[in-house]
Length: 82
Image (cartoon, rainbow, N blue to C red; front, side, top):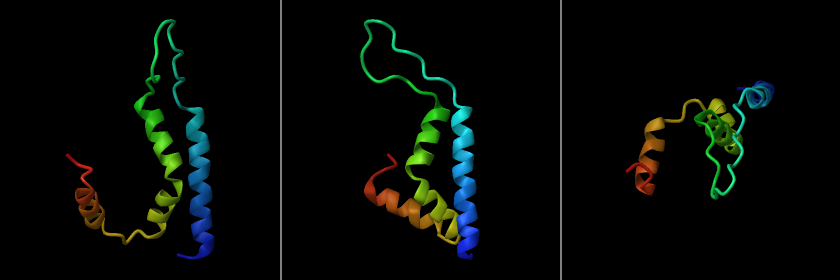
């Protein structure tokens, strides 16, 4: 994949993220007397993760030959799935 194609993918991904933020459901305000974290929707949590790990997602687009079994093994070693 050429550098131009990778730049186009990255630009398209950023455009999708900015379009997606407009469609997110609003976060409800905290009721009086309540404390703690506000609950967000599953869509909002997914958008947060895609935004946070933007570089890794774009790299996965670029290196599409990465074996997902290796990723699963690494997560198993780290103890992520329980």
